Image (cartoon, rainbow, N blue to C red; front, side, top):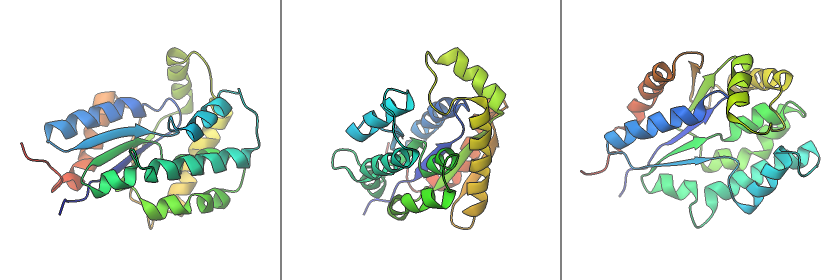
Length: 214
């Protein structure tokens, strides 16, 4: 029987440097011969495409509809027959995701009660809970500077006041769920290399027994 893989999730406000850290982590995992797969949310599924159009302002809808679409996209991400994450982890692949349900708790709770959002994502939590949630904690002003350099268009939440609220919601959600979630907070204002070293230190204990054969 195959050893189950791990599910490693990166969280943080927009511009926190998650993509860079996922790249570093994949390099580490491959050097250790750990089968791995990187993904992100929202996905590029039909549901995810609707979400992207909402986030860039092309479609207008109610905030609860947005939250429900994210929850539906997440369930499809876990369960779809082509590349569902739950099956990948069950079959021994370590999955690294750029965002998961803590992103919904943080972002959507800006406009609605956090408990409502948590309940909307309960099925995803039951199907696949992260081995570890890695939160890259960066100052919102620094994040906005990075966004301005790297993006041609702003998304719905990419304003200073909202990013401040989102960061506060992350911390509230972590405190609320600290007894059932494995959460590692890392200072995102360090150099990318320093952050990557701390990410690896947090992840390495979980990958023993998941290495493939050379």
